[in-house]
Length: 166
Image (cartoon, rainbow, N blue to C red; front, side, top):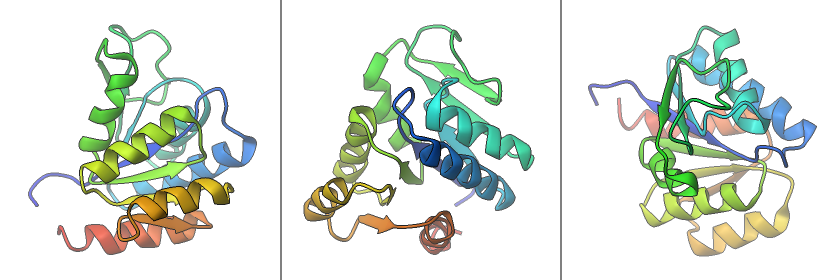
């Protein structure tokens, strides 16, 4: 593939649960351990912050694609902040810049990112405790919406997908 593999972790900010954040932290650390770049929404709240902190704890490279036109509210664990001034429209950049997207938790922004990734024919790994959202996204794209129940299963799915790139 030539360039580094980029894995997106998308999930709620203020609406994230403790479980979402714990999983995001562990996902970020695993992404770094595999030598992949982490892409997130870059803010200093919820899943975004937890994933970036996890990646930094394992020496990873983090990229935050911000909704604002400045660096206000960026996670301290983001290495490269990309202000877009695009608000929620930046969600499309998040998923298009990611080779694989992991949706950790669920909220309106996360749902939009999953839908945008599926529309772009990208695989999305869904890690949440919301059967209704899992069923909905699987009904839209059974081959590309992959539901998992653990961080380990999510990373195994990412590995299987990116092994085809390398």
